[in-house]
Picture (cartoon, rainbow, N blue to C red):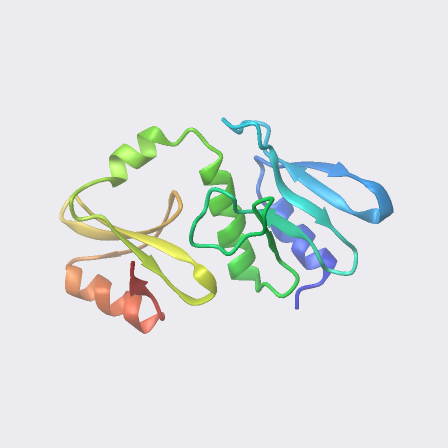
Length: 155
């Protein structure tokens, strides 16, 4: 389990989030550019390492009735991925979606519910985590093999 300080460092690496200190040493992080009424991405990160991230618009995550996912036992990579997905879900990303909505686009789900998008662009097969390019391959077979080796399956 990551410590409070480790989780805080990961969360603070997202410049689009604004820190808001709340009671009992807990911290919230807001995404002010949200196109929805929902602005809190990280809710009640506690010094004991417990906290929540908003995933109400992310069907691949098992969230509570408020759309929150408990991050107490999340790894660093899983936490980064969830926060990135949360911010993306609250963003005006119609341009990015249009770019990624080719007929060849495929969604893959992997360990700890990470979601990757495989897109055929400019003669390459690109793997994206949110808006970030993770890897590029010359063929669909190479990309598929990579995804499977990393524990991902097509959605």
